[in-house]
Length: 589
Ligand code: DON
Image 1 (cartoon, rainbow, N blue to C red):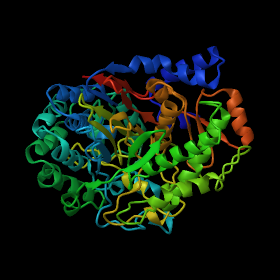
Image 2 (image 1 turned 90 degrees about the horizontal axis):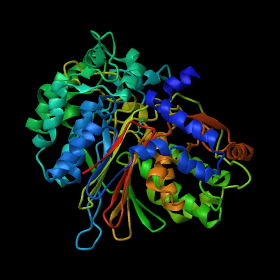
Image 3 (image 1 turned 45 degrees about the vertical axis):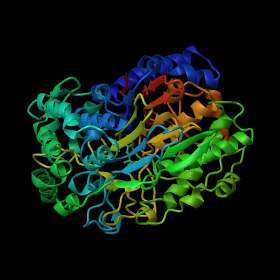
Image 4 (image 1 turned 120 degrees about the vertical axis):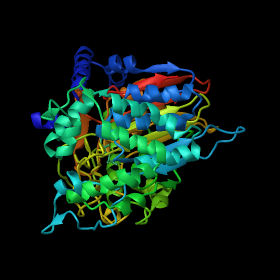
């Protein structure tokens, strides 16, 4: 039990949240719908914000305030997003480090009454040039510790190049201005967050000496505690180099040299050439329709958008078959959702990877005929999984998602990650940069589960320059006139996709408010392992018993992703809904 809690990603303040949830669940012997709407009210309502101009919903109030300050100075949603991201690289180094990667979707407001094109920037990490398909195998066996800890675990980072590309393509302000506050925070110090303390404790044993020097307190003998001051002079120098020279300040020169030589001295393979050769990729979003809304979301190398659109498609079929009439939280509605999750995650494991390297049959996976055929496997009276059980693994966190809208209605959804807490635990000496362990998102060997228990196949095998398959799902939902209505995404590995799906299902299908849609209890299933994760102390005992009778094996757990969402109504009002499961905040302009 202790072990489970330790790995559950539940940070201390969540204890308060779960105890609120628990008290409510005892006090209220409720219908599932009332349970969902009210269980998490206390925390989610406290966190929610309303406004009528711009809004940022993010994991860190200080960085989001900085982004909103940029909006007030006349910046647009992209300027604000870039400012927030560089801010979080300082305030939330355990998941927003420049040593990670991510995805960004930008939907400009309609022009002259016509919907604008949305753009995707893929700044996911790439496998280094010297990477090999079997690089993590020893005597034919996959050694996950090599893809998860230390210098060999990192892909070539993309955050700096991605943010600067977004700024250049769609922004209006100078990087020097956006970087000014983050530089001073790194120089003068920030207060360590609860989440960062938790992450550092969780990863302390795997951190290299430099990471402990940078993120340790009390003469680096222990992880810094929440509230302690953390000064990051090396990171300040890196940010200054970026301010001065753009992406070259990170990927080349002194900083690039320190990253490459630090990694290689510790047995890693990222070279100067890998760094200077890194470039983000502009992609076309995956699009779907759901009850009159257009869902604009991530294409490969994320599986997020494709699986999300499939899940919404299955949900639509469930509705047409009358299976959702008992509403949110009913056993039948959950049964339909879990079945859809098993179908989609089975596809993910087989077909999905970086489409620049392996053809992903997107058209077929999203075609109405295909979804019709697959949905025929739904059996109302029992669970009907495509296959048997997998391996249960702990579930470390972190990633960060934030949602931005400006007063003109331009919307940005951005999710970044270093994969695990503090990524690989490796900081190249003198840089202050937390390197990712995104190589673990590749399929090391067919059928071998990764950090999140996900399995994969040839489509997601390692190759030089290839990007590992992701679940990150930054998503913008637009109305029929092309106005961004809901901007959302999440942190939480594969639970990102199912949580984004359930948030949209709650809002659009079940008609909950956005705040309730984010807070409501969730389930997660990913085909393998075969159990269904059900949020602890949620859903009625009757509902759970019905699911067991259908043949689902339920596992109570915490940490079903952290969704940060906002909604802009046609009259311009905006509601920000940070997830009460996280430490986030909504800041209104
Ligand atoms: O790209 C992915 O799908 C994973 N690297 C995301 C990891 C994650 O969300 C960790 N959790 N909070």
